[in-house]
Image (cartoon, rainbow, N blue to C red; front, side):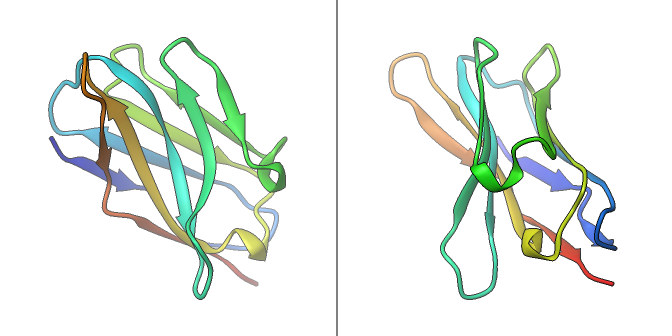
Amino acid sequence: VQLQASGGGLVQPGGSLRLSCLASTSISYVRSMGWYRQAPGKQRELVATLTSYGGTNYTDSVKGRFTISSDNAQNSVYLQMNGLEPEDTAVYYCYMRAGRVVIRPYWGQGTQVTVSS
């Protein structure tokens, strides 16, 4: 299974982007999915998570600006990013954690988001 992330780009402060992450095949027993980001010189940061029962969690800096969602089949995860700030500049990576007994992660390749005027 491969995850394909897309939707990144260059946007001005205050702008919006929608990131998408599509799985190459159906994934069963998805437990959670979400997005990490890594800015130059910084550690990877968990941005948003969505659990199989619909629970969401966001890092404090994006609360009220970012929204995570998925399709009903849970083969994709999205991140709607509004009110983008220069501090949001990073490579964004999607992931899915799945498994009936043994839970393993699946990772996307990353998509660059640059917020600059």
